[in-house]
Length: 305
Image 1: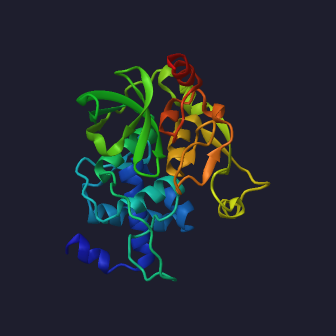
Image 2: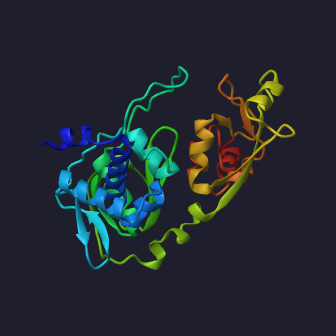
């Protein structure tokens, strides 16, 4: 009996639990019986049967670590379920969508813009296991500026830029915290058991720990500001946001926020203006914010004039 025919013979609730087992093992690296008990409100005996059945269907996918008393990723993993990348990212970042990946008829017709790029799930799984386990990750990385290089990074968070997925990590090559585009990572290897130094941890990442407070207002040169206030649910004509400095530039770019001090950008896409451009002074990726120039840049330009 093949794994596919075996799955087809199971009731939907049990297939959902097996799918959850696979997600946890593949992208987190481990699962305990109690994880199933808590997630699905089942008895321990039922969780034990589910884990045994999953091992029967995919013997190379999970192993039992008797010392840690947990099931861990097997050496010969072959996915039983075909998960779309968007579904996996929703589960990882929003904690929903962990059942069997089925296509149901929607309640109302809808369309959403598709991403032009999605991470390879095997690469993503290595990244997320390293994050969960607090381990370094050896990778081949392809950079626009420097091409292919071998690096060791210490990843700790995923970042959705609105266009693609990055992983925030300490880079042992440059000795800096940086964002790495997941689609540019190849041949990742989780370095289990390798120590992570104190200066490589997320609490030492100034751009990650710094919170910037932004006030966005209707663009002064766009008509009907009251409609912009409605669109963005502004209070008193202002949309207030608190963001990590490490993500501020991405957000301002995604929403086409005019970040010039004199709201000088033109175009219908600029519905919002950053009221105080100094709020993102020192934000490393502020260069991505539309029209932003740091005070230092402005001073140099004034001196050149």
